[in-house]
Image (cartoon, rainbow, N blue to C red):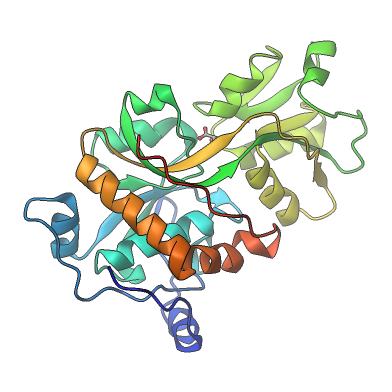
Amino acid sequence: MRLKKGITASALGLTALFALTACTDSAETGASSAPEVNEEASFPEGSTMAELSEAGSITIGTKFDQPLFGLNGPNGPEGFDVEIGKIIAAELGIAAEDIEFVETVSANREPFIESGQVDIVIATYTINDARKEIVSFAGPYYVAGQDLLVSAGNPEGIEGPEYFQENPDAKVCTVTGSTSETNIREYTQSILTAGTYSECLEPLRTGNAVAVTTDNVILAGLADQNQGEFEVVGNPFTEEPYGIGLALEDTEFRNWINDVLEQSYEDGSWEEAWEATAGSVLDTPEPPAVDRY
Ligand code: GLU
């Protein structure tokens, strides 16, 4: 595998020229960086890598409404998850503009992988044992933690999930099919469920819910997008290692993606991807060790 050079000034200029208008559930990227494409990529015959490389395109499921990680903005999908997708595609010899990004929400990630609607999912997707029964995971490439988003000034004085044990009628909003939903059920049954986290903002605004709960980095993106309206409590109560979801039996592809991730840690492209996206709001973390389970 070659070392990549990362973002160049000319790459930044070029991607601006290729900026595309967003569409509702599928889009090509026009975001801010483009890793160098490995034109010499060659793979074992019959492997998923060979198939994708020969096809010259890859379909990636990601979030479309989560600023910092996966947001389908005016220039196409952008965010750290999108950039990780570009790093993987580039090593397959696939340019950023040949990636098809498809919207996945929390509840449809496993079905989209199982049905082959997407080749991989990179979507703030926690690796856990239940999901490992259905899909396979490369990574982790980041570790988040579940937290709470409240109205600015934190009028209820919410410090953690225990608040909901002490106030069983207070409602918290989260998303169906997420680990956030499973985790908060240990504290309360007063839960409003939505299809995506951005749909939880209105109940918080109107007072139908006193908090939104999911991973701290998702909440940080929503707070940043809606300046002055919300704040993150800042007391994470779980560990959410983010993986790249792929077909259950495809160990060869998983191992190869893990190699690409480790390479991106070494050559600086992981850090550049962070700094170009989530890094506008969050400090740059150390990349986590990949788990070759
Ligand atoms: N990381 C958690 C999960 O995969 C919560 C965020 C999300 O729903 O994408 O369920």
